[in-house]
Image (cartoon, rainbow, N blue to C red):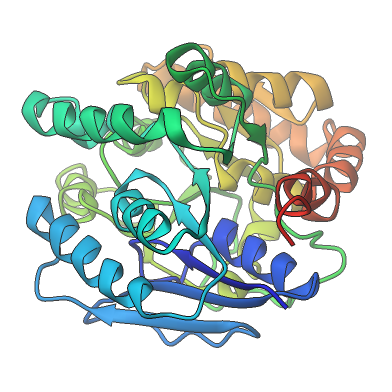
Amino acid sequence: MKRIVLSVTNDLVTDQRVHRVATTLMEHGSHVVLVGRLLPGSQSVQREYITHRMKLLFKKNWIFYAEYNVRLFFYLLFKRVDILVSNDLDTLIANYLVSKLRRKTLVFDAHELFPEVPELVDRPFIKSIWKTIEGSIFPKLQYAYTVSHSIADIYYQKYGIKMEVVRNLPDSWQETGDDSPYPGLPAQDFVLYQGSVNKGRGLEILVDSFEYLSDIKFVIVGDGDIRDTLYQRVLNKNLQHKVILLGKLSFSELKRITPFAALGVSVEENIGLNYYCALPNKLFDYIQAEVPVLVSDFPEMKRIVQEFGVGEVLVSREPKDIADQIGRMVKQKKSGYWKAGLKKAATELCWKEEEVVMMRVYNQLL
């Protein structure tokens, strides 16, 4: 039995991708440990595999990443392990050093183009540090995979490494989950956003668009850096009766919300390659719940929407135009316009199919 340690910098609660990877590896006979961090407000996690969350002194900025990697380094240095799995660049330093010191196999899972995240757009010095770290380690990676073909192509062009593409596909919702509605959902039609409430997610223009929608509400599930300013925006525009911020919820709670939405949105802004190449979890969660989607005109999301006929690409980023498109799509959803495409996509775009691709990487090692 191979001992595998996966590491992330989040608190494990809402990271669906890593949870599915860990579960699949466990089901294939490995002993799995998932390492993250513990925050003051973190919910408890109960998983079939082992979890370990470190309580850190620092919560953000460079000193958090430094502390986390030092703590992770010493944890991995003395841990019984055969395979180290680093999720994203912010866990790679500790994993790489331990893999070299202990001669252990390292696997890298790139969830995003880390130096291109919106939080680094206006911080060129910090961005340059992450690019230096990336450039010094990436060419030496032997086993790696990522979330979209666009990201894989960029890394191949930069470093000559070929990465498998393992998309963020969820488990089939027809097979799992509680289908009872979450308490407090609007009785009327509502548009759903689920995910991080951070810069560049298009949430501000979505909120503004609801000034023009009288009979549809907007439900936001998630937390992040701009949650307080977004809520203040809602108050300033007197939209608190239309826009509902539910905060961060668990997988099971989210599954009791998504199927009742009239429309799911993923309208990230083009403020860096990371968002432009994105293929987010939420897109596939909407599809599994058979909810049509409205997405940014970015290549990966656009490809899914057009290939399966499960929604539309945003035609304008003006709030009034967004409101018009949302209103029309909600009416079309009621008529069953996307029903056939959503059913087909929900069958094909699930983790049962995608884990076969992921195991092509790990079958070489187990």
